[in-house]
Image (tube, rainbow, N blue to C red; front, side):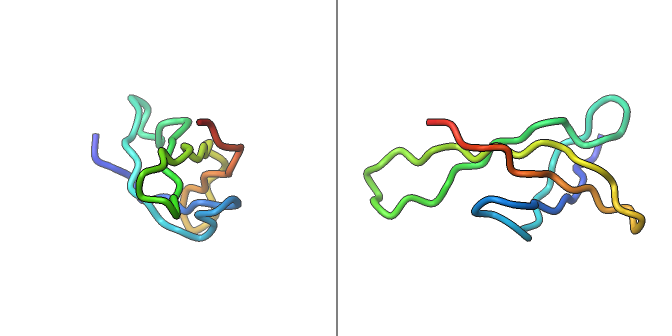
Length: 70
C-alpha cells in the first residue's frame, strides 16, 4: 500500500503535512508518533501522538493531537 498524505491538527505540529502508511483497508494507520523538537541537542525529545480523525470532503485525512509520551 502506498503512503497517504495527512494533515496534523492541534499540538506543536498543527497544520503540518506528513506521509502515513496505509493499513489493509486503504485508510491511514490509526496512530502515529513523531519526535518533538528539543532545544537541547543532548535531550531525548518526547514523542507527539496523533490519532486518525475524519476525512474531509476534499479527501484529505486529518490526524488529531492526543498528547505526548516520554
